[in-house]
Amino acid sequence: MKLHTLKPAEGSTKTRKRIGRGQGSGAAGTATRGHKGAKSRSGYSQKIGFEGGQMPLQRRVPKFGFNNINRVAYKAINLSDLQMLHEKLNVDTIDVELLKTNGLVGKKDLVKILGNGELKAKLNVTANAFSKSASAAIEKAGGSTSTL
Image (tube, rainbow, N blue to C red; front, side, top):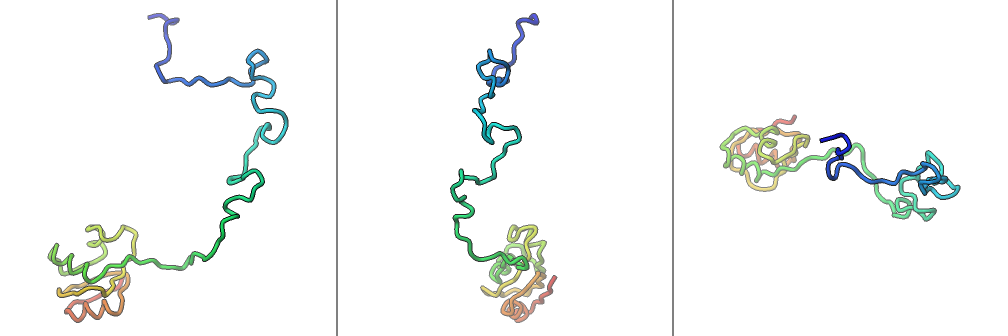
């Protein structure tokens, strides 16, 4: 092996046009940018969404409604889910951590217990919020509710 036989590995280099390197290169003078205008200048950048003067999409599309920044979003868990969890794991205390470990809620979700379904087990339930029907059904079954 000698120095003059060395060459880069296959696919490790790209062939690109070397622009603005003298008249003999064939890409000198304007360096393939054309003549005059904003696009030929250094530092040119086009506004995101610019469509050549046509009304941009983000201004053409109708807008309605709003996002309430004070909205509190809860993940709904029904009484039937609590009954199923009790039968599956045979637990008497259900809290947010247990729901997270069993994949019923995400790690940042706030949990609200809703009254859909039937609860037969006596459970102690801890959650962020309860509906009136859910708390009534849990207490009717002999359990207790506590809010975080």
